[in-house]
Image 1 (cartoon, rainbow, N blue to C red):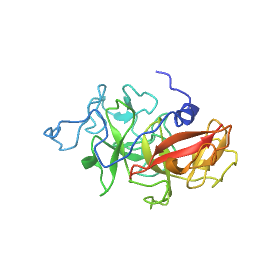
Image 2: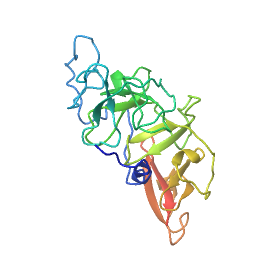
Image 3: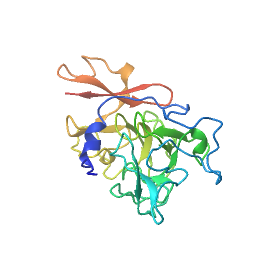
Length: 240
């Protein structure tokens, strides 16, 4: 099946907000009493194969998640070798079984069906799409406070809205660009900034309640929501 080009994800990042909290966010999860197969691993509701239990694929292949196949993202592929936080590619997924490469900016992240599946205390299971069969584990980080990202490979908290996955994720920084500087990818922007496809520049992220229109945004700009911090604070930028 053909894949959408990688730049599709960049434009998807501007298509609306999503809250991140400590609730188990994937909409399709196991019943709490279902303990999965005899291996003791958690399982998912993916149709083609199960990326958590690693069942449903022929010998020599494992079940991976393709972030561009939102309706049913589980596919059987040759096993990758990438470890957690290691840079990765999505076509094919170069992460080891049980991990997913939703974007090279986030690296390989553990797959999950609920918060309890995540290996580290305080991590949350972020849904891969509105009806995804699995999610990925992420640190609970704050964009406005620039806290929660203590991983050297991914030191900056950034909002991911309307794309795959949805919520705040720790990301890498490749260029540390500031307000108004030209960008082509969100990982090029410094902490607290967002690479807006509408302007092709890094824009400062602020509390929506603190942005007045007109005032903080000019008369020819509008306030656009790009996400939500863990405490519920809405995140906004000013765009043309």
